[in-house]
Image 1 (cartoon, rainbow, N blue to C red):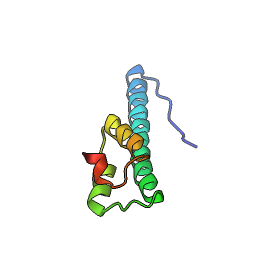
Image 2: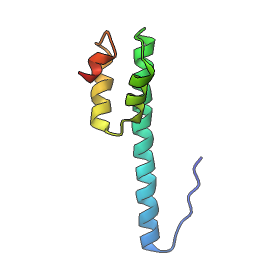
Image 3: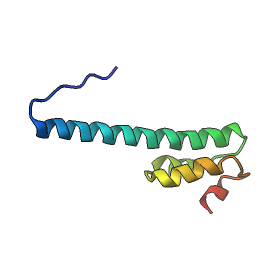
Image 4: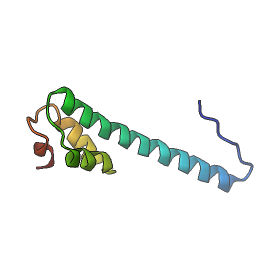
Length: 82
């Protein structure tokens, strides 16, 4: 359970809401990146450390969505990056 403080100042409330939204978005990106790696491994595809780092450090949600779609059809992790 997340507890957030309610601010009286509208500026502080807006700042808090923006930071919470940013944190949720970053968490979503991180979760999807981890899913890419997990699906590859569950399919028996080797994920070298450099490829895992590249996937997990990506912050572009469109790129991660593309990889997440591609994991169903690739036979080697390098095919995601091509």
